[in-house]
Length: 295
Ligand code: GUN
Image 1: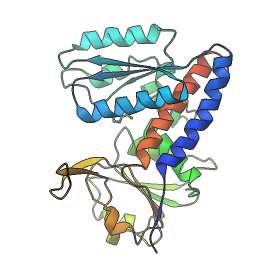
Image 2: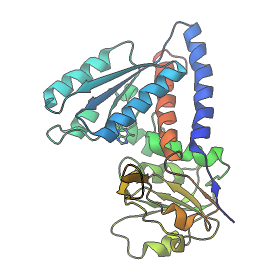
Image 3: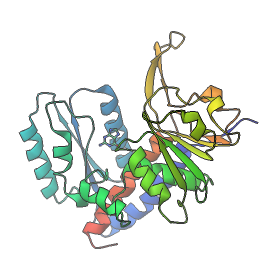
Image 4: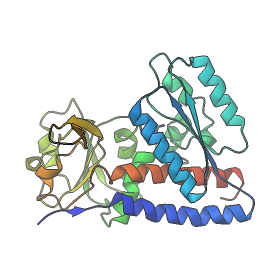
């Protein structure tokens, strides 16, 4: 039987509608949440992500400001920009799109963002609060994954989850979140990475697999258990002479190879990507409400 295709776009639209209702209530009190997105350089993928986040903000009534700087911006100029945004009363959330050019110390900039405005959840204070079981701002992509599992009816509680990839943006924080004892998490989590021999031995036993290692088409049908739920976090451009643009976007999962074996799968695009954006919006509204003592 073909797998259920989990519609991340539809689920994110539901979340955005819920947020819009909250934002309308805030507006009645004269409060408009604001998000500043900083984009440095000319990476086309980063420019696209920032544009999508800004458009999503505008659609639901969040004030959005995209601050573009060219590749020659210095570390000190970035420090000054973040300090200025930390002080601004009309800005509740700040995100600095990663990656930054090599000559800028990216963690150094992330660590300067006021943790109360850190809607990406990358600041060590927010990472520490997550580890301590007192999350304030969870990182957006893991947050979107927990939400998509819950809202699509695939509760990970009591299940074997295998996460492919131990990165700071997804794999590592997600392992903490999914293993935490809550009604919508509480899973047995295994992280596989480049040091894991025979990854298939783990993936074949998994009820849920999250592929977040950044290797195009890595997970194949013969590596999974029939009925497994597959969450694909990958966004990779591959050459495809048969495609009008000569290339196409694929995930870390070989969709065609797993689609008749898996129980459910998130597509790329239209799966985890829209959920990440919804999570950023949710964190921005939370930051705004917290700043105004409304939570
Ligand atoms: N680059 C890739 N993913 C992300 C993200 O979630 N936030 C930011 N700021 N940059 C990214």
